[in-house]
Image (cartoon, rainbow, N blue to C red; front, side, top):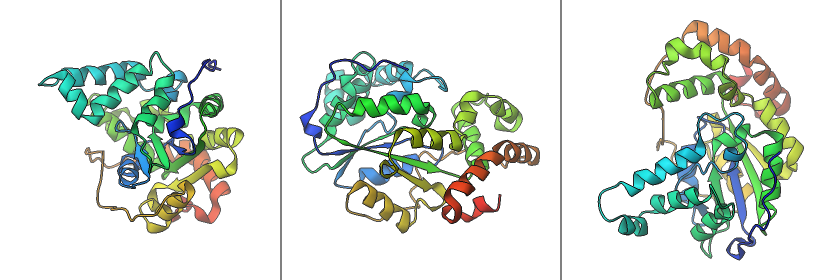
Length: 295
């Protein structure tokens, strides 16, 4: 287990506030959720959406080097036309990228980032990083201990989606990011990838959450019903903020590559993911979206 850093600073600007960590799952409308939460007056979200702080320290299932990504993102902003200092003063994402680069060598920069973003009216601040779902029990225990350095309430949101649909969406997204990741021909590689399949292992994530957090610290929602008023009211109640309706037609970071799932891939995915359907049926029962129960 990664050692807890000594001498973490307490940010009094955050006293009494709630940190929401949305840990995914990947391709479960977390970008839409970021936009929804950003529109709530009592909520502050990171302009980066995905901060990738804790998974950089528990990188056993990483799909990339998150510290290198932080430096590349900062380099992108530094290379933009115009005066770099003026751009930094005016662009929230540039400022957040600088904060994230500082987190590479200064653990205090994580809560410093949110202390800078929070206002007097802020009741909740959010880090929406789906890769946190695969940091495991040790990662969650470290996260909990790290957050204990602040006078805050820690809450976790885990959004799940029909396992086969979610996996196919992720593979299409990986192809969109890198065309050589051809989903139609390379889907068997995904089944052999520990990093990809860890993101499909809802049962392992649920067990790790149960081992570390109290039941009232964790909210489970489902992609298929996330956009409905009932789910959004549940989320706002969980956070202690006033409800506002969302716009389900406003899609964000939606995968643009449209490919039908081949029949042989569907059969292989269903077979591999059968334990996930079974675990979720046993745990959530009638709360599970109808399509899942028919799988």
